[in-house]
Length: 71
Image (cartoon, rainbow, N blue to C red; front, side):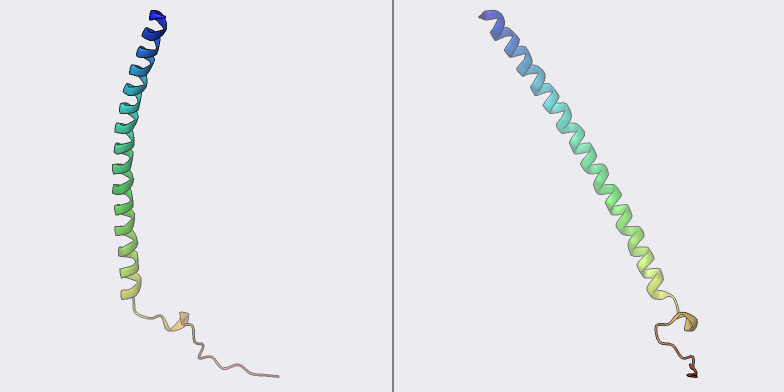
């Protein structure tokens, strides 16, 4: 019985240590994800700003000014 208790104690200790290790790893991954998301948002915002500041291309507009002839 004492051996079983000792085995359970050490398994429990190992589980707690592993939990602490995984929690630290999860925090690091969360920080990395937030940094990457922030970088992506900055790049996306920069692209949007560049697109909105471009002058309109008359050849690429949604309204067509060409005349069509019907047969």
